[in-house]
Every structure is written in structure tokens, then in C-alpha cells.
Amino acid sequence: MADTTEAAIFDRYLREHHGVHADLLEHASTNRGNNVSNTLALLTAHNITHDRILIIQDASMQRRMDAGFRLLAPQIRVVNFAAHRTHLHQTSSGELGFRSPPAGMWPVHQYVSLLMGEIPRLTDDPGGYGPAGKQFIAHVDVPEPVTRAHRDLLSAGYLSRTVQVHDQRPMVGDPSTRGTDLHDPAQ
Image (cartoon, rainbow, N blue to C red; front, side, top):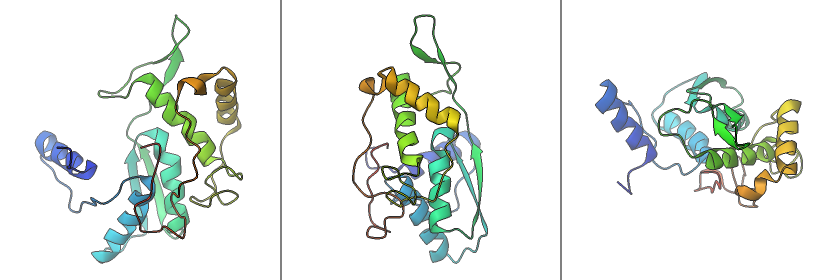
């Protein structure tokens, strides 16, 4: 099972639980950047023309995946569908908790770490992944309430309990690494 790809696991789940299977599977991706570039390459290799891409995944990763497609294939219309939206709230003990997590959800601290890492990546400034920064994704408008919540959590010391994610390794859209095995610290 250790050598089984995420795509193969999802395909097996679909077959075993719903009686359907994927027509094409992309097995080489190791991160969201690879998901974009390798999916586009797979479609091209099989002469599958397309003017729309439907992205179905958890809402926490939706914006960056969309921005990756907009950077690498701006002519394609990206249709986003969040398979679930996980809401957090402050528990009676003052800690963050899930309102109603889907089955198999990560622990709260891991999920918040993922979210806290997404905000600086999405921000289009010199430290972000957008055109004004590392140029791994297309521009994303980060809503002010999200920026404020991120800042408030940082001020409250929440990042000290999560993983620092700003690193210098290449991601989506770095012209020097397109089509290579890119590293994504949020995986």
C-alpha cells in the first residue's frame, strides 16, 4: 500500500463503494503543482480536447489549484466544486474545534496548519506564490476577512503550534521546474 498512488486509492474506493472507475489516472503527481501540469499533459497525450476543467476537492485547497490552472492554462474555464467545507469554531475550553468534520478528517491542529500555510501562499506579494512573488500561481484576491483572521491567529500565537510553511523550494508554474517533481510542503 505504501507504493500506491493517491489516484489509485481514490479509483479503488470508487470501484469498491460506488461501482464506477476513472477512465484515466495520473500517477506521477506529488503535489498540487504537479496535479495541474501532469493533468494537462495527460489530456494532451490522449488527445482529449477540453475548454473546461472541473476541480472537486476539499475547499481548503481549491483556490490555489484554481490559480495553478489559470496560470498554466488561462484559456480553460475552471469550475470549482468543494466536496466538503469544514467549519471551525471555538470550543467551550477556548480551543479550535470542528463543527462537524467529514469522516477521516485530519486532526484540528493539522488542518489549521494547512489553512495557515495557504494564506501566505495565496497572497500576491513578494513572499507569496502569485505574480508579484514566486510566480507559481495566477493572482488570487484574498478577502480582507481572511487576511484579518490569519493575522489575528498569528498574533494569538497559533502558528507557534503549527508548521511554518514559507520555504524557498519551487512550486506550480516555476518555469525552471515545469513538468518535474515539485515539492509542496503542505502535502
